[in-house]
Length: 314
Image (cartoon, rainbow, N blue to C red; front, side, top):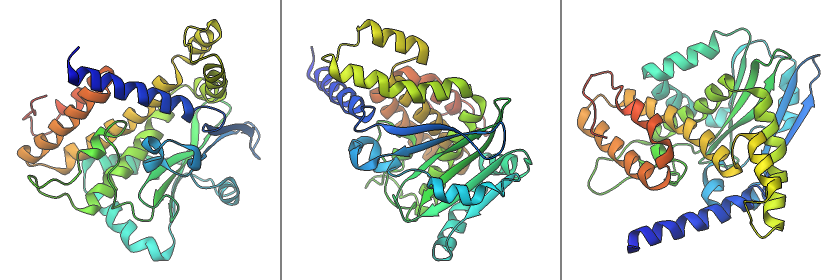
């Protein structure tokens, strides 16, 4: 086996072990399905315990979406549209990030789709917690299974810090180098916003029953996995995979890469200059080839959909 292939397999082995810990009882995301104050409404609370998360994930998603107590104080005003909860000291920067996000067709369309929806409330919070990252949670469905609320929490220094290429190949493409022009912080922040909007978009289209089932069964899977010598052929694990529709690693990857495809849509619209856009896309492809080859199709589709009609080589 060649050295590059051996190194890659070694990295993947470490990555899988790290992710197994992420979903263990010690490092798992804490999910809770509970009946809300309004009859027929359910809420899923996602509270990542960042102090136990591997650096690979915690460096971006870090802390949870806005806390339960905070969301509870807003629940009575769920009347549709976008609700922005931004402390005055962060407002100027937030408005700059939002302006860049809305400067693209993708950003305008997605913002308008939530702003003008009386049956869905999107809360956007800016917090000093996890200052360079973002996260999405506090999903709420009605009894018909339709997503009616979600919360995006953005860090107060969202315009700094480039996430790792393993789960975030699109955002990582903005990493500054000596041979390419530097992307401004507002564009980096808007790309992170697009990633979080991607999570909301995908969750709205997904099966809420499956989402909640996965959230309940992932900890069970990893508890067994860590106690049986990491034997993925254990019949109990095979049955859990069948019910969840994939392993915990596959589920986590799928969710993150949908967020990243939305970030790629934003960058596609943000940079009309073919040369620089294609440079970013080549960086994305390199990371996808290394860490997410099974998900290449969803990124390729965006690379081939450039509005100018001039497709970047993929």
